[in-house]
Image (cartoon, rainbow, N blue to C red; front, side):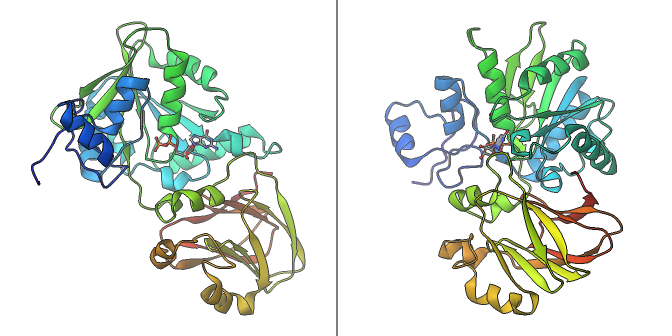
Length: 370
Ligand code: GDP
């Protein structure tokens, strides 16, 4: 029937279709919950039973309400982002909502960085890009939520900067915010009733509160959905092939002008103009990189998308995959051509190249990191 059901934990409307949206409940759990008259959404169920949080995404509208409450709070804001997808990590308008609150910028997924990359360089770059987006972080931390690397020292930093205030953790979906919070929860286990939920006043949004040792809370906010991420165009399996999973091993390609590299079917790099040169590719180690002639590249892509050039691999994903957009760039010095969410190619100075990415996914040039 179409009678609306609500989670008794967070109040979200129960739905069974969108895993990433509030109120998601698998069909099987829905039946069981109704039988027992105890219907929780999956997120609240896991929280109750495993002390584990599940990511949930919001539309912009709900998120704006949430942000305006953060503006009125007196708190430290911990802004979690994916170091492989700066653009895809940006919370639109965040700078207007932080008010006078300090922001601690956390770059997550450090485990993916090649060993040779100087961490201080990356931090500087993150700070610079944050400044461009109007955010002036008091500090920048690099962590890996997945491997628990530097999460300890992050907690020390949080404690230092919060100065007996609450802490709000914010971030868009897919940056690893839930993984990070789960690590924090794990490090704090032992206390009974460690986490509680409550509402953001005036909204149906739930917040998760982890008590700190002085009557203040670390508050996890739901993640906003940022449509311009590779993650939204691929299914889970394909995404694993494209997103770096562990420390990247650089690969060098000697290219003549007029040569192209395909990254599966999700991105492309053209060497347009310059002498024969070495180009170093930093991408997921198992992603298939196909070299071809630039003049054949368009027709190859058309004929081979989803076959030789995959992912995308399922018919559904191929059908829905956005077309690749070309970004031509000329280097004044040794630079990284960054394809957000995927990785980068180090390009020598004084050449012309083009990076292609799905429509909406950013392609940018930065000073070479290595
Ligand atoms: P959320 O939507 O921000 O809560 O993100 P999740 O915690 O669900 O993580 C999104 C994806 O990123 C998942 O596939 C995680 O396994 C992965 N992930 C999260 N943290 C890390 C990390 O530190 N390193 C790596 N390599 N992957 C991570």
